[in-house]
Image 1 (tube, rainbow, N blue to C red):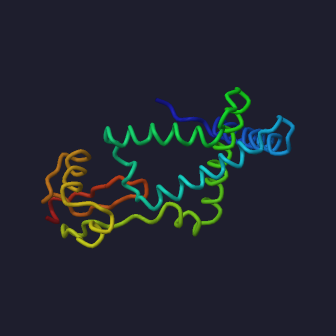
Image 2 (image 1 turned 60 degrees about the vertical axis):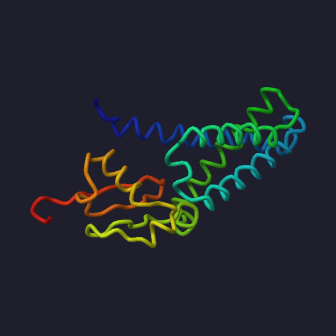
Length: 188
């Protein structure tokens, strides 16, 4: 499969920038009443976005890394609840578009802010956490992140088909997944 050419990457970047400006223009039109009384949708959507960001940051990075059937049900309920809070009785396409573009615009703005302000990125996403160092399981980080050795064993099996004795280093990544670095034969 060929990679995108530098020219294609440049055009994609430009398209994203133009799209972001259009999204913001649409959201601002809603805020200033050009699209009717939809400023409430923008403010409700922004409030819900920030609230969910805080809830999932406090809940921990492993909350959505592995979706169990309970997690899926929880996400469906959260989706329905937040939809009601965002648009209430406005079942129009314009109302839904305002809510969706508000969410996407906020997400794009957050990505930009995280890139420009590394401290903001660390605040929202945290740093990777070392769980196993040179084959030694670090209990304190496991406990702090609501993990146990079984989680590391599962990650080792899934990523490399390894047993716990073959794990040199395990890291809880910012996205909630556990990455494994195996021992090399000569270092074991």
